[in-house]
Length: 273
Image (cartoon, rainbow, N blue to C red):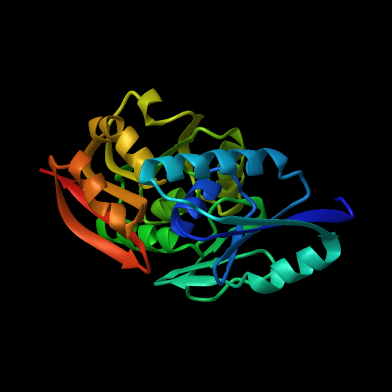
């Protein structure tokens, strides 16, 4: 472990949710929100991410014909302080019968315990979209259902689905996510039927449930692949509420049976007509 780490603070004048989504697709050590700022911490350089962010901001400005002021602050800090502060800030999440906790917290009696260390994973149950996806899974998953988690990240949604009785496949375009999902399934004594690097189009079968907690633009882009692989239910998340109709338009041959809102985020449960 390095003695120092970098802290990147990003404060945009507008489009904070879109920028957060953009960063979540590229940075996997957790993003802290503080007032109007997004704070990222890593032992690695942020140079490439800052360059990509500036390119994305330029695209947003061109698309919406507006000016976005972006305040970027980069500082170097002691690693010991970061780890202590980070662990103190991450507390367990309780979603109905599921108790999702990091390794520095004990299990909870009477709950389905899921161990996820946020610093080593993509999803830890704290983000609104993860919470609402878990609630959506509870509504539709039946024992022995076949399910695929598209963009599996830490594997948390697949683990929950397996605990509910589903036979789970998973995929992600990032090899780090594949490694993380395998490790977390093993850590939680969950069974992973199959996993691969890439998207759902690499699968040769259909599933009772397809869950994709990504972002609205990607859900629109891969809509045909998702629709072609589902028999019963689609759970779509990572959607900012104002983009809900844009997503629904691409899935209009499905029936919207429920939507779960949490702050500005919405998770959609769709059923094949």
